[in-house]
Image 1: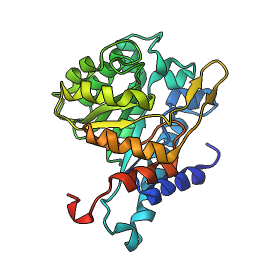
Image 2: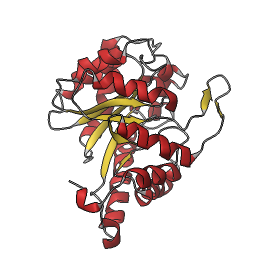
Image 3: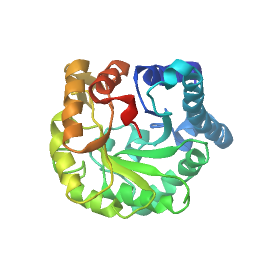
Length: 276
């Protein structure tokens, strides 16, 4: 709301660091949230559209420079469809302990979904989903935007279960036959759990696996602060392992920055002639 140009510059920094995809700053944004800050419904919708446009503008600026196109895929812009828990801002995106059932979640997500799906982005990032009921609600919305691809990624409590305790394999099976789902995976999760989660998903789906864990720090929900250390070179080394174990799309979530993405790119980007 206050400095959209700074958001555009952040997106551009990630492209310059080597990112092939950026995720818009709509994760915690919603019509209801903006209206609670005093905006009208149409003003709130305009802010969501702006979140998409900032990513698109940054890509256009990056791709307009010929040197940036050498050995690179044209980057993508994914609109973030964050969980209901991010709107609540009470840590429930890490538990799935919601006051809404599947029908309520379907209704809550619907307006933002259509705004973002019609914003000109390349795909939707349905991310940090803590519960299978929220995944089902978003799965139902796919049918209302039949031309829009999406990935689904889950926050996980350990190496086998998403945050509400559902096995990650059940989530993989739920989405494995959805043509619009272009990848299934994990984000906003501790890096130490990623190898096991990749293995679990590989057993139930042939779809590409997306992983973008947190830096390795842990979030103190009560005091709203991060604890621990973030080391970009180590994160890059882990990314190579995740790729070897079957992850096709790799990035970073909380407390990662352009330096982490640069490390991933240096670890994984091969000979430009190999790019398909």
